[in-house]
Length: 71
Image 1: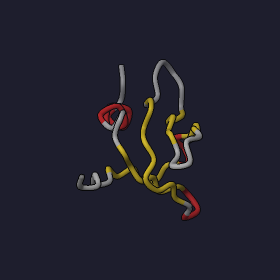
Image 2: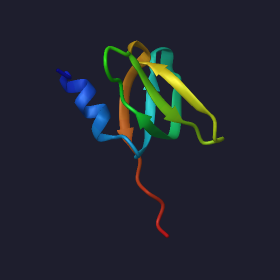
Image 3: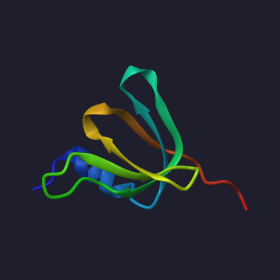
């Protein structure tokens, strides 16, 4: 069964977020591709340059949805 933090990440799949990491680093305006599943401990994100990354949950301090740009 998924814990509360995993459910929070799943609710952000497909959305644009900013991620604050341990040590003060951040990833701004990325898209959550997939939240952790089946014992995995990484957050799969699409970066602004089009590449993707797997961010260890142990490095995540905060994830906040960013506002969409007005069309």
